[in-house]
Image (tube, rainbow, N blue to C red):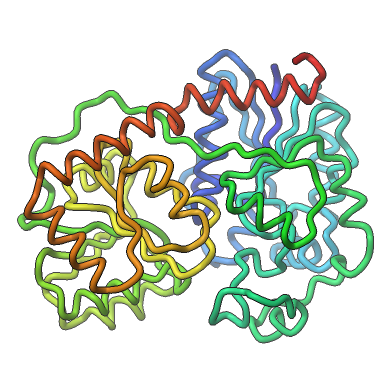
Length: 399
């Protein structure tokens, strides 16, 4: 089959797990003999970062990457954000559809692409809810840029959060465009239920993320001289790394290693400036971070926002490392399904869990093993792609 992936962000023009998933899915489909085109918006990334990556995911046999630039810079994503329409990007997508016939069009992060492009497609149309953008203008149900959203005050929240109001949300055009989607794919049961709770009426199916199995051996030597807990992710306030650093101000049982970058990174480094056992290692390539995962006492996910999934937990499970997570969004769901870690609700519980993992390697390895077993059964490439193609067949009427 021939697939078209449409997404605002795609590596290296990207920030988080949504773009990584699009890349992994595209590569896996190509490996299995399908053809994939990816369309993404460089204007959006460059507008938000004021920079351009030095390299991109290049086209290869079976995979063609289309990097869109409008020539008008930030005006293109700004108009899309305000109106929900593609404007300068629409012509590029129309031109691609005139030259190629696609069996499946899969939409991902569409916030700066434009929902009106959904009217251009005739084949099966899928949409993955990587964030809560369909029911939340700020994407993450984080109200007033300071707390989890418990009551929708969207217009006020956008103003307080310094985001331009999205006027298209107050007319019916968004609903009309979304009716063209055959199936909305939700990475967690939590986010599926949250969309329902907030009134979303599209046809939704639970399809969790996956991490490709890496059969290469992990380096036997630890990359760090002392036992360490590992944080991996974007250095943003909603990810809760500041709470982890405050905990390590008094906790000395192991070091804290923080991998990633983001707009909150400078503040976090200042917060940890006097802590010799807290280390920032930046954003690492998948092959390098895998070794850090494997040798960690545990991976800690301290998010304070409503996480849609928690792909970091899967990456830890892939190398049999247990996870410690907050009860935020879908994070407990992954722990409950696997038995591969602990949900902590206080600094005291976090300290007790880290102490036990550090001093009782049998316990640590047992939980890591459960996580790995669940990863192989639920979250590796084979079960994911089999279910993904089954959903495609259902939408085509083949099942």
